[in-house]
Length: 197
Image 1: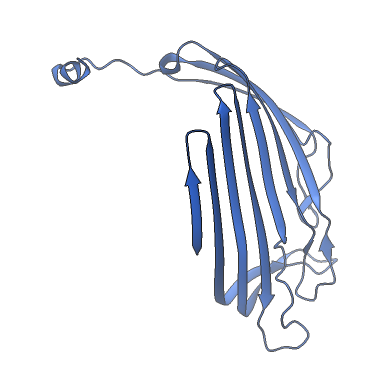
Image 2 (image 1 turned 180 degrees about the vertical axis):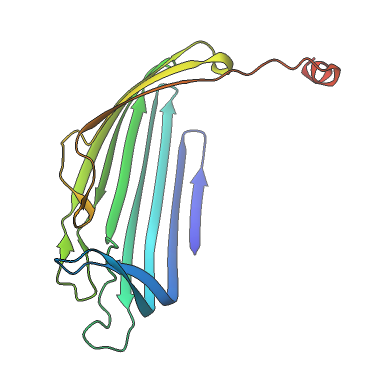
């Protein structure tokens, strides 16, 4: 791995390049009409680029994103598979999120996307590219140390029908309600009181 990063009060950026060589790599493959099964790849190579960005220009607004480019190669001697892509490894994958609002009421929108990917070493079967959109709202009552939080999130707003493996669909449109709280008791030991003073 080799990476560069920059950070300031309002902006963080990082770029990392990586390369890896594998021996006896276990990876799933899918050949219809059966189920996905693990197979052994004698030798394989993966290289890529990862980028991440986080911006916080104002206290009430923040944005973050990441993108990964991945190139994989099967190094097996069999000419039918040599230099073909490894299954279930999309070339492009990204996440982008925007969050805003006062401290007591935050809203967010998030996009998750990835390119098409092969499902077998022959590069004959593919999973289609996909994009999922999520949105949510979080309310916080009370100070940070004694907060009560109520969150409502809608996932996969477009009700996209997608799979991680063929025959194993991800959930469609769904709604999640989360209730949480935090309580930090004040220290009462003499040492803690002295440190606080």
